[in-house]
Length: 288
Image: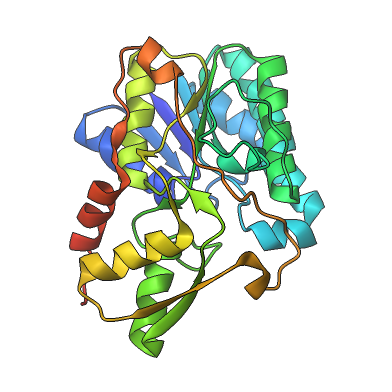
């Protein structure tokens, strides 16, 4: 299957997906932000019309949660209006559009992992903008896959966020010997290399619609941090705190772990447990 256009190819997921496609011999076009700004709608339409991909993967996003509160117009431009434009372009080309979304479209009040059909109710500008992008895509082009994920980490991290949670914990732990991490927010930590494999399996299986794709299981951010240091063999004190310990404009869901009922409908197994994925990621990092 192919060719595939990968937007956001310089990010954690985009780079892992391009490596996977290269390994499998799938022709693809890596398009990082420097190559193509998804907010430049006419440029996007021209470039994709030239490339004529059969599949477009949109891994581009503005996902710094606090900055989305400060720059809601930019959040909406990248996470919603750009998706609307991509849906229209893919409709013209007859291309499948695979769009990456987030657990932050939920408010965290369910108290159990969210499944695909649960109603969205975002708490912050980032979540609102991502929910709007999903809405535009569903309304404009049925040949789509929306992949919601959670707690993404991989590679050398996100340039927008200055790394990822795992790398940040390792850096702070090495510098300070202690960290403060919240106990009252839960997630499904997800390794970007696993997400790339799962995403492509969805494409090959003929999936359409919305799917939750995360490493199996969930934990609090505090438990996630403890696992990082334990697996790395680092003696770091992880202080438990509540969300009120950190000043921030953006409200965050207290329990945004994801589960899936739709993967099984395609005969696809869930991704491996998050602890196994984390161990593999850490084993590939240099340092202690």
